[in-house]
Image 1 (tube, rainbow, N blue to C red):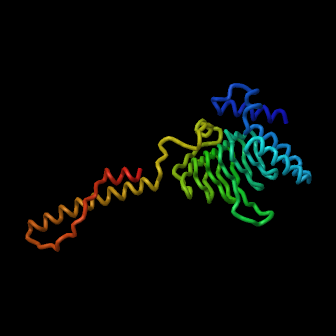
Image 2 (image 1 turned 30 degrees about the vertical axis):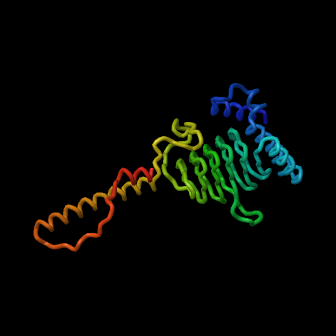
Image 3 (image 1 turned 90 degrees about the vertical axis):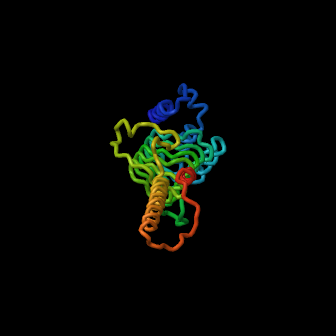
Length: 248
């Protein structure tokens, strides 16, 4: 048990530049305190002391603002940063080295007792502030969930998902022990992670502008050739810079 606590403290100090020493983590980090108390609640839950496990979970919620059901499985070196408003459901599984920020919900969409209702986070997953992961599916190892995203389906290993509903914007192929996989990414935000929907819209805008220019050239050529064309319906020309600024 003490080895696990030392691992958790060392992981927090490594990941959070604001953490100065072990004493500060033990006394001032609600995420660490919530995980410690979850260990007590889980111990009771697994031995049939269901009410006591739920009561310890309730006390932990009052003291830390973090609600972890005693039936949830929490891995090693899990870091719940700030943590206020975090909710982790009964059948949720959080793998080793995951990072969860404030306001995150690992929730369920089913009312079936005994079913896998809550998500599984494989090792190294980062879930940004305010994100909601809802359902009994799996978030692949090393995946990142952007802040305020609503995830309703599985996310592949190493991918980044953002939006409501969330969609994958980036996939990274990296081994679990590589430098890229170990890189800490605050709030699940990565550099140069352009939204694919935005990129497609930009391409459609460019295509429409190119077609507009081509039609104008064809109209001029036909007019010079003496071919009469029906009068074109007057419409405001597309200004790509203006439209692109709305998409960004």
